Amino acid sequence: MHTAPAAGRAEHISLEAAPDVLATPAAPVRRKARATFTLASTLRGCATELSLLEDHYLGVRRIRGPQRTDYVFDLRFAHHQPVIVRRIAWGWLAITLTLLAAATVGFVGALSDTQVLWRSHGFFVGLAALLGTPGAALLCLRRTTESLQFVSAHGRAPLVSVTGGIGAGRTGQAFFVEVIKSIGAARHARPQSRQAFLRDEMREHHRLHQAGALSDEEYEAGKKRILQAHD
Image (cartoon, rainbow, N blue to C red; front, side, top):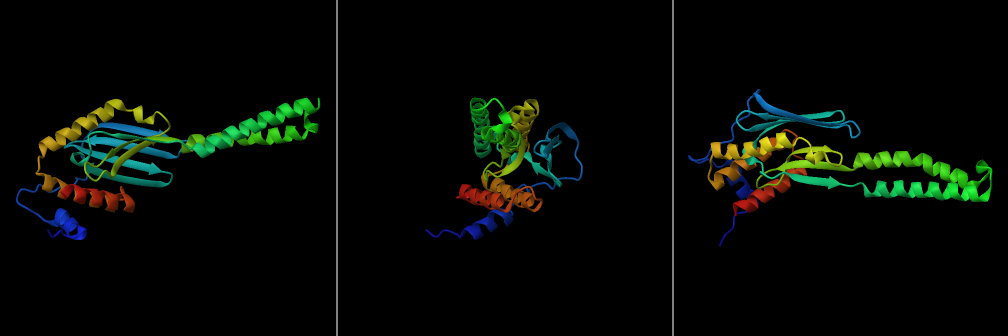
């Protein structure tokens, strides 16, 4: 049995039109917001602002330092179950604990060597380790993150990621419950055949990639998964 090349199948999914295909509606310039949620982290220099819009769209404003990305996506292409991703800065945690241990050993050694602390080599070792501990601990906290992600239905590409410290994934629960409800309502309001849905999901990935919401790697990986779902 002859199998079409991946590139040909990608073109088939993304470009072919049929009478029963419901093309992805172009997001209007403005839609009324039904609910909003913002999570900002001064420590990490990032913020995510979400707006649940009319007609089951989600507006996203993502701020990372001086960079800001704004985009809107159709919630019917989102998976209904969000994913929590935790990243622990184990390296910086180990450095913090090592410095704290070195400070303790240094000061204990200095106390046992002489009554005049600053005359002991151990005192200066302990002091240096103690001074370095807060900086290492701060970097550990900054690089330890928890993100709540909504990924695409078949491409599994991260459509939106809300990032903060440990526990951030549990904030805004009422808002995310409404988002999950809207995902189901979006598919009910605009029912499609599987092929039509996959074709429109591919187009939505392409649009979000052009908008800067998806990286090259995320876009290519998502496209590959959609093609596999089409087989």
